Amino acid sequence: MSKDTGKVITAIGRRKTAVAQVELSVGSGKMIVNDKPLDIYFAGLMRFQREVLAPLETVKVSTQYDVSASVSGGGVMAQAEAIRHGIARALASIDGGFKALIKKEGYLTRDDRMVERKKPGKAKARKSFQWTKR
Image 1 (cartoon, helix red, strand yellow):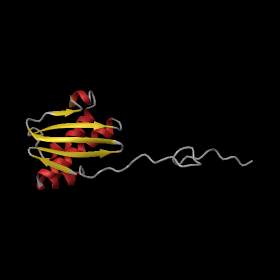
Image 2 (tube, one colour; image 1 turned 60 degrees about the vertical axis):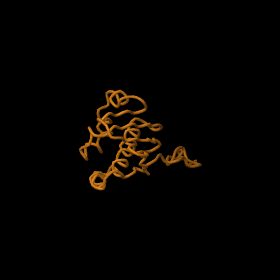
Image 3 (cartoon, helix red, strand yellow; image 1 turned 180 degrees about the vertical axis):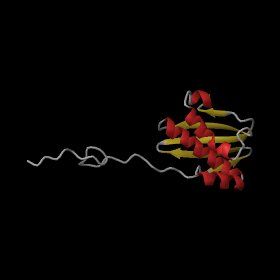
């Protein structure tokens, strides 16, 4: 789940097909996603920027830790939620008090909803072909 290697805490967050590897270290509050600052990676998408920062804001340590995330797969929203999940897991491994606050907000719960697979004899996952009587 999460691993403490000295002063850097690593954790993995997932959502749909997006996977984020998050490294949390003591610092000044810098956010780096795929070697870009957060506001450039999610440019013009304040909703997703707030989504990523939510666990840090919940425990009021947004200026005490630097976050470096490497995320791949999925769309923009899934990537933001995967990063949020990874940050929440890393913070939960630091302190039990953090874990209680983060768990109450629901950030530790992995949203396991995935795209349903296509079935044979169907047009899509559930949609059938048009039925003709004669």
